[in-house]
Image 1 (cartoon, one colour):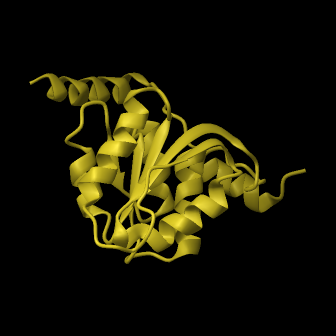
Image 2 (cartoon, rainbow, N blue to C red; image 1 turned 60 degrees about the vertical axis):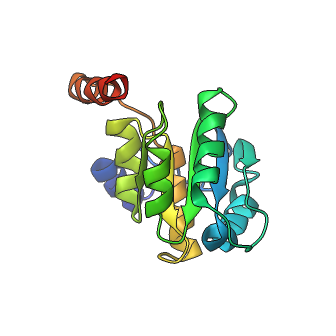
Length: 172
């Protein structure tokens, strides 16, 4: 039986899993530059067995490199159908977010809280989560990523109307 705590959380934030270690059917592409490398490695270790497939798009060490390269790699995995969602990590999350949003089909956002990560998927069909490896710690990052992975787009009329307008911007 669910505890009253979970009942309150579910009534405020929607359904939540009580088993944080359950496997998600999501195929996740993960990438980041040198500033996000340490956190990316922790994420790969933590979530590798919690998603149906985890694709590590690099980088492979802390040698200085360019974040747009990893945004492109993650986006290509999503756009090809190889991955369902993406996670990008750089120092602040800003660079990878800006780069990823230049790519058709990608809806990326920086989220440093669980509400935005969940709501971004539910309302805006966000498919790439961006976080700053120099901004937040690993435990908070894990919670945010779990919220992102556990959320589903809710195609209510108002959400779909807004998403259609966003998609139309890609055609201009």
